[in-house]
Image (cartoon, rainbow, N blue to C red; front, side, top):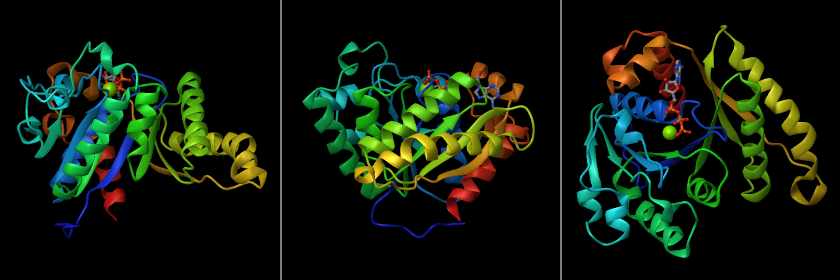
Length: 261
Ligand SMILES: Nc1ncnc2c1ncn2[C@@H]1O[C@H](COP(=O)(O)OP(=O)(O)OP(=O)(O)O)[C@@H](O)[C@H]1O
Ligand SMILES: [Mg+2]
């Protein structure tokens, strides 16, 4: 299906609070699934100092966002084709200058997103873990936020903390949720419900000057724990290409379908 070309990309930030829950795996494979549906998709590695989208996609970029920020390369040179039929803007690794949100980084990210938005239908921001200023700034540039949680208590606590900050600081009133690494069918629904309960109880009453506001969490889907994911990451291949029939791949394709409808 070809989505009608819109004047500006819809920007989705993929975040989680806790690290290592599957943001980069999900963003890369979701991009491939959306590209297959006819969307022009760009994934930006918004984990500016500790990037690893390049590793997951087996790309060895000579040019990254860092070169664009420092004026060593043009934006066009930094937008690279990725396996899976989408484009990427990769970041560098071990760059301590991106651990803090300086005025320059703030403006450069805004500028880059402004310039790429007209060229794509969808932009996915693969953020770093945590709720640092850099992560929150990247999220603030997105139209929609998707929080990835796993059923582990530590992941749920961090997902809750992220949702709280987004509702209170950024005025987000709708947040999408994907539950990764579920072991039982329907576990995603349970996790969403548990998160919604704490958000309703502890966050919503304090919003909008104490008058209260709703922050609905929309479950976009669940992804099972699937050994194929680890295998694909080890081989540095997209799961959708190396094991398209695996349960996790099918789950990501279903989520892309839900996003498109
Ligand atoms: N559904 C799954 N089934 C099995 N393993 C998974 C699944 N999802 C993720 N993993 C494992 O978790 C690892 C970490 O995933 P990924 O790098 O995408 O996390 P991340 O949230 O981007 O991490 P970071 O916070 O460091 O950026 C993967 O390499 C894979 O081994
Ligand atoms: Mg990552």
